[in-house]
Amino acid sequence: KRIQKIAISVPTDQLAKNLFNKKAEDWLPTIANEMVDLWSFDPPWGIGVDSYDRQQKYDGDWTDDRDYAKKLIEFCVPHLYRTLKDNSWMFTFFGIQFYSDYRNLLEKVGFKVYAVPYVWYKPNKVGAQNDPSRFDMNQWEPIFLCAKGEPRIFKQAQGNVLSYDM
Image 1 (tube, rainbow, N blue to C red):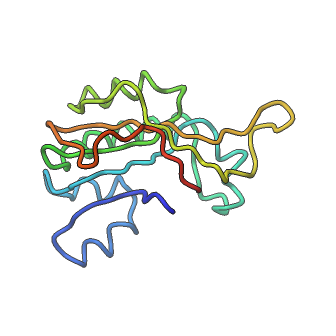
Image 2: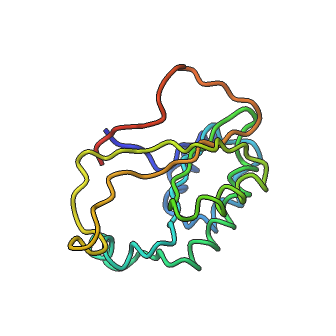
């Protein structure tokens, strides 16, 4: 099973073909207001993961330093809110150490953010970590569930821990 990075409804096939081939800074401003049914936003976390876990996978074309991540998130979040339809959801991954700052930013633009994050548990997580001789490997990621308006959950009485392989 795989969690998609972005879910968006668009009026033309051409926009959908081009959407994923552009930087967020270029294409987010071009999306009309209240056009998106659901956002799944997985920005750089600003925790330096590029220095130990991603460089080999992306041939060095990956930036996860704190300043870059902060600027990108501050740029994207207002656009994500603006483009999301009323009574819709966004879920967004984040570095747990930025819980307060990120939640404050999301709420500042208008999102209702549920205080207890969802957790994506990754039972098959393997690979590099900061220093495996000093730290255990994180097998989970926090996710904020954010609402614009008053959306409803279709499948009710479910838990907030999602167990999916990477």
